[in-house]
Image: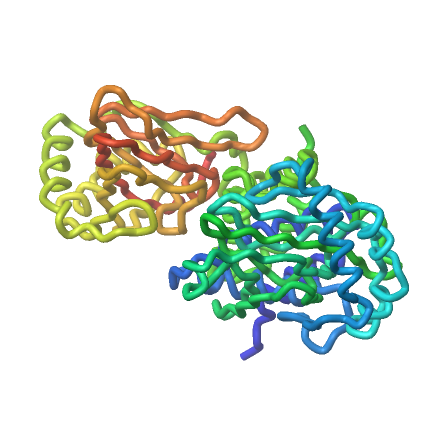
Length: 243
Length: 238
C-alpha cells in the first residue's frame, strides 16, 4: 500500500507552483483558517487544525531548525536602560494619536523606533538567530489600554513574517497579579500552547508569518505597550510583501 | 467576473485528494471564508481580503468535482414545499419539543439527533420526488437533526456543512416572537448576501456544503426551532 502524501504537504507543494500573487492569496486563506481553527478545541476540528498548522510550518520561508515557537527570548545588550526609556517616551507621544485597530491601538513608529528598525544592532541580533532575514524598516507601537483588548490567534502577513516583539511596559493592577495577566501565546498544531509573560525590555523573535500567536485580553486597569519590527526573507519577491 | 486563478489550482488539487482529505480542505476553506465574513484580517487591504474570500467561495462548490457545474447561490428551493403536509409539520413540531431536553450544545446552539419521526420523514418518497428533478438523484444520509436557538446569544458563525448535510433541507418549526432579530444569511460569491426568513412550515433546500452561511445571534425572548435533513447528491444538475 502506498503512503498518501498528507494534505499539508500537498498544500505546500501547491504553494510552490503558484505565482507570487497566488501564493499570497493561498497564504492568507491558510492563515485565516488557522486563526479560526487553532482556538477551536472541538475534536472535529483537529484534522483541520493539524493540516493547516503543518502546511504553514512547511511554508516557512526561513531556514531554521524548528520554525515553531520562539526563536529568541531575552534582553539584547543594545537595549540599554537609556534606549528603553527613550522608546517608552516616544511610545507615550505616539500613543496620544494611536488609532483603534482590531482589538488594540496602533501607532506608527517614531524617529527612535525607526532608527532602531534598520540598525546594525537589531539586524545583527536577528541574523544571529535566523539567517537571511531582511529588515523591512517598519516599526509599530501597539497599545492595549481598554479592558478586553487583545488579539485572537492569527498569522501575520508576510511583511511581518519574522516579528521582533519588544515589551516596553506592562502595568498590572495589584488585584490582577495573582491571576494570569495578559500574555503572548504561541499556538501549535497539536492544540497545545506556550504562554510568554514578557517583562519590560524583553524581546522575542518568532516567525509570525507561519507561527500562530495571540495576546490574551487585558483586564480593567491593565495596560500593555509593545514595539514590533518587521523582517522578511532576504531576496523575497516584493509583491508578496505589501501591506 | 473572472474567477481567481487559485480556484483552478485548488480544484485540481481536490481531484487528487481522498474523500477525507477533500472534506478537510473544504473545512479549511470554509474557516477562511467564515473568518473573512466575521471581520478577521480587517487590517489587510480590502482587495486582498476580497480576493481571498472569492477564492474560498468559488473553490468550495468546485471541490465536489462535476457535481456543482452551475453553482450560483446554492439555493435549490425556498418556500412551503408540497413534500410536507400540515400534519407532517405538526408532528415534527411535537417531536422537536419532546426532544428539547435531550439536545446537546454544539458550539452556540443545541442539537437533538436521531429522533425517529424526523429520520423516517427524511426518507420519504415525497421529498425524494421533489429533490430528484431539481438536483438529480439524492441519497439520504440518515441524518435528521432538530436545531434549537432558544436562548439569547445563540447562532452559528459563517461556515459550510459537512458532507452528511451536503444538501440540506432546513425547515422552520417555530420562530418567535413576530419581531425577529436572528436570521439565516447565505454568502454566495460575487453577490449580495441572501437573508432568509422562513415562516413555520417553510423549507430552504440548499447546498450547505458549498455556500457559506450563518445564523445571526438570537436576542432576549427570541426562540427558533428548526429541523434539518441531510442528503448527498449522486449526479447533480445544479
